[in-house]
Image (cartoon, rainbow, N blue to C red):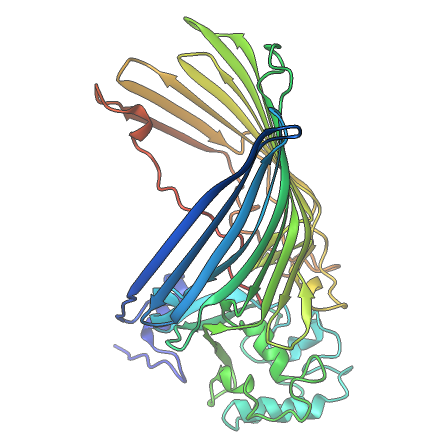
Length: 478
């Protein structure tokens, strides 16, 4: 018989969470009420004129009154100009607002594992940090001040040059305690788009009449975006990494007060990560989409062969963590737990053969070389570049009877191993992981399913997935 009593800010629940990676959540409650007014108008301006087959303007306005974020207005003005039967010019300007959601307002403390490439600046493994001259290392002229600050934020526990800390080796992962914030305001986004749609002018050709191309430029600026300041960013601000955030190494600095350490041994435990209205996020780029369908032999009738090419060029992805603070470019980076991957360009191509009773599709996704996200905030980052990555998926659909449709698929058809993300130069065993949702499919995955279609029902409404717009980004990594 024995009793275990966790020390410091940890308890039995968070210890179990750290071991099995299933973080416990305390009960909470809250609600959001909203009242809205909305109006929209579509105005046909001109039509049937030389170079103006149709010119339309669309305008809309919405006022939303939230019990949490207060009243906000959004509006849009867009236009479509059909020059002729095959060329359209389109564009618009929109002002949007996103009110904080239930989790961002009411979420209790939840422990989340996050990237921490700098590691604990108080420990001896700081000498292996990606940040040269930072923390407890010989090349830091402020090493004595660092150690004094480490002791102060650890409740007075003495920390010296030989302090090992939680582990002797650099372990580039930390923990945030993510907390809701009832004082959040709405994000405001401003979007400008302009582009063109070209439909095939060869209407009499069976090989060319089902061809289309769209090219759109977009720019999106978000002010006061809602996110958290993560462990790596908070420690760097507390320990004056930029030379401005805490030049006196004051333990009462607002960033230092977010740090949780065990006063009995000085170990780091977590960082308070409150949802906040932070600085600005600005992104811009070009989307290109090409579709081409041609006739092909089918079973019991005609078929078709379709090619779809989707290309994105990212011109910028700039983040300002705090109002008036430094702007960081996350373009051409990967590995961030909050910014995900921001490739300079992406290419997705699919080929589909529809033979009447079913179809066979092959999808090819190509991702170019990309840098680790530490390059966005440090000129001294030295992680290896991530190699280009190609992955193929195969899927098939077959109508077995009038009422039964069978589907099957293989993801990662050629068993492509994902590239490692965050590997340090010269230390291949140091860190390195895969990026969830981007490079994490290491083995082929086979799926099988079937759909029963009720007689007299609309097949398009059978097993229809939830259709929700995908956000253009999800929060920053600091």
